[in-house]
Length: 563
Image (cartoon, rainbow, N blue to C red; front, side, top):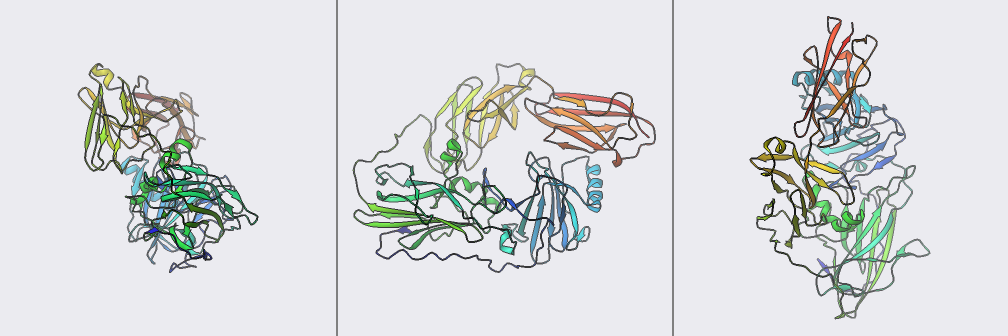
């Protein structure tokens, strides 16, 4: 729907908490400490929406984590990244709860898990227990809070999903009480003219609008002279009591002359929709200014289910008519911040627009396209982009500048370097890496090799470099010296590191038998618990085989004694 001018007065905006048909007293708190949030449901993250609540754990690990309701453990996933150590509990009322970043599980679950890790000889594992294997009553301690899964600090990530669809649902809908007396903050407001004939204050491109606070705290703008199809967007976040974190909104609404023109509501979504966040926000502003401007309109190809899809948010400004626009940012407790935008329809022929450019590399987004330039070739599948564009593309022997990283991609594309000038041995040590703007660090991208070429499937535009990794990873024993007696030690620890392509794999053995070594990413340490296995003899031979992502290898050996 495109909103036309109307003479009606702006109606009062009705705000309320809507809990729908979700049970209100079914799930208990997963922690027995005061609940404060560092992350809210639907919060805007890098390339995805946050799927649950992040409960703060006082910057500490080890708090008891309880099952929110009776059920059975239907999934256990252990990963060095992502959710780290995570448990999924399926409940009889059609919901599944998720508990992530745990430090460890209760003894029964730990025993079940370790048995299967040793069977598969893998720390990272995913298990799907049967319904009768790990039943869980309400109030059962299932584990202890931690910070596993990458470099996040201590907290508990908690989700409630619809078991049948696997779609996450905002846990606040189920009656969790979080103290919140603070209204959201609107930091900035942008105008988005939608075509060549449209403008706001004479500008035919997106631009920042100045806002100021009125006496009652509502934000306002001066009257905007505009014409044609105009849309708006805001950078906004929510604050809660007892925490300084900048959290996501529950709702974002826009009204034009009292009639609702746009509505976003963080109630539920599908994981398949995650990438659509790059259409919900202005991707260019995010990549250049690290600021997420949430658009109050629905872009083409944006099928996100968190929108009221009967309202597209585009305002049709007619010459000589006046419009009162209201944007409302709301949290789950019903606290709101508003910004009033008066608009006067003024048509002008003097519109300032951005210069358009053309290159030799035109992409029609519905068609596949391949380009070559020197030692580099690109292959884009159909619908890799959301719209047509001219691609900027430069390449040298080892550097590729593929446009700028300000346009979101719908699909991955293939980037290939010709490596025929390198020896066969050197080709094995090459890898493709992505370089972020303003950073000297290069990020490894998974590569594949054919004769005289190296390729990567990548999902971002920007700078890619071909790098040679000549150096094997490093490994050093932390707490055991050669031929030391360690009968009183609880753990064996090894410091590992690779500053080039990165660690790919590690295999630890004692007396030729595989041992479970947990990788603490933050400290760069592998840890083995001596309680895992019993050895009859006193003399033991430890061996670690460590490989990086291009195949360079280091072997660490240590003889020790233990009874």
